[in-house]
Image (cartoon, rainbow, N blue to C red):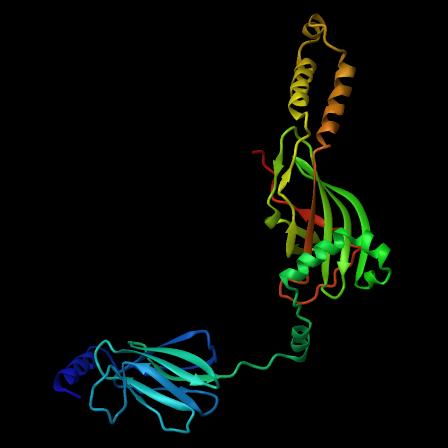
Length: 327
């Protein structure tokens, strides 16, 4: 070590007591960079679970090297550990350790709180139940989801022509409405694909306004009891159209509402229709709005963690739709 470097480290040691260093134990994390504090007067030893270490680094030197580098490393072939320490002021080095075919990244940097020892252990084996659940993890591709949508749409036609076709599919009619401010969502039919653990819902959106209503198909979710499932695929335009004569109906509706809210004398003077007849006509107009409909299909697949949910068709499927908005 040169006299200048020795003087720097001597001055540093006079400013504060020598650090004792911490001893840490962590699990192996191949996708994580370990940032390890080091010091000039303290060895930092990193221990792996087994021998067979390979090294690729920058800013490192061995004791036998004549060209100085910021950090010195020592490793004996066949052992499962190596040791580093700072050589230069503001020392920093980067090291990749290849262990059992995986890369473990390290950054060693000068620190007032260095690590004396870092022991890397293997993560604990998953319990038998978790391993069994992993085997049940679903592998449903996008192409298969699209196929299931098509099969649900054509279910009656295909099942009638091929009686054995529906062995993986069960179906149940629903027919209940979920009211929203601007529209209703009628859950019409539900299909269950057993092997893929997927439920497909046919939903009819019914407009309750004289203008088109929009919703976000990608934000639709289905609530079953306390569980919420986000759709794995959706076939929906996101628009609930208005009826063809919506403009004329809206104008008539405005006139009838104005009549019913006006003073009786003014209404009689304007020779308008009787109040009972006006209220009946308003009901007809509101019913006419509901001829504006849009059919959509939504699928839910398994649990959010990828395991099977085994949702029964006997459930009520509460379709959650992002608030409708007028254009």
